[in-house]
Image (tube, rainbow, N blue to C red; front, side, top):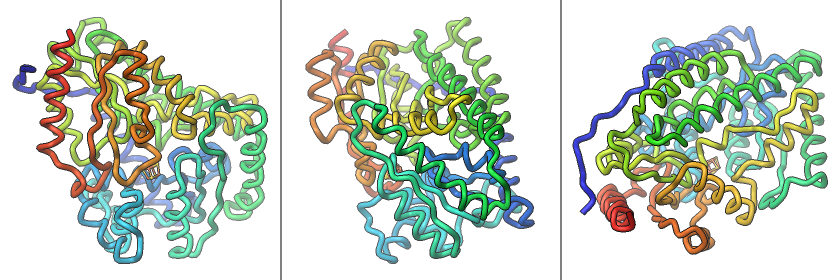
Length: 415
Ligand code: SF4
């Protein structure tokens, strides 16, 4: 039987600094919303944030708020309020938790940050359908609610190779956002400002990549669960110096751990790849469960989604189009499997866990035969768990625990 041991969680010291950086970000947004000193754009997490920042907007990300609702376990109570407005319990539970919280006048921000009472009101909403259709519906709700403009980029889907036939059409859509954004912001578009922001985003992406790649070390200094917390600045502060400053601190700490052979999981014995969304309300429970089984979830598609190696400050529009279309979630199974093969090898993976996330089909890659195909080819066992990113009613904790324990036992037998 796989041995379950007492869990000692190894805390990352840089967490305090990250909390300070994130608090500053939210207070800045709150101040702008209260004073009107700066315009606020709401943007999807892998939308054209660089363009918005370069035009002087502060950028707020509703998906980040959705994740906070999940992590604070507020989401499950909020979802029914969106269902009552006609948003199905089967669609994105970021969307339903966020809209439900809005209509209830609730936000985890007011619990975490004294003085913040609500999410910052937008002056414009900008989405990119590269990840799913839900973001467009989500932002449409708020466009009507706040009576502000809604702008969008419509991306190809199921892309195998990001070819020259695809890139210009996305780049053009980004350029077409300029006139309305100039009107809303009151600022003229400045190519040099955009180049600077794209350069900063690229640096952020490179540092975040280095952070995640520390997990290739054996033992790994980092777990997927740490990654889901520490990716905050890569999501909401990319394109700013603040994100770079933070990741330099975090990277140093992780490199020191590698030098000292300090693993994030004591006596690491198994290395797992997490494919799909995290279960935000169960991060700690899942982290402790894997640690207790001497299993380290070393890598994931999810945390890697904020690595944009295509950003090029010298060619901002085309490179943004490439970066935001080259994402895992936009790609065909053929391209996804190519990527997974590299990840298995790079991180020396013993087993793959697929999260079949009930309300996010776009991030559930187990549904069209991928686990079987990769298992057969790579001889790396896999497990599918059923759950959800935010709606805890869709999760059976007992079942998940039993399945993960049995999976680790199987890996033990294979050793
Ligand atoms: S990708 Fe999934 S979790 Fe993200 S907004 Fe779309 S449906 Fe929601």
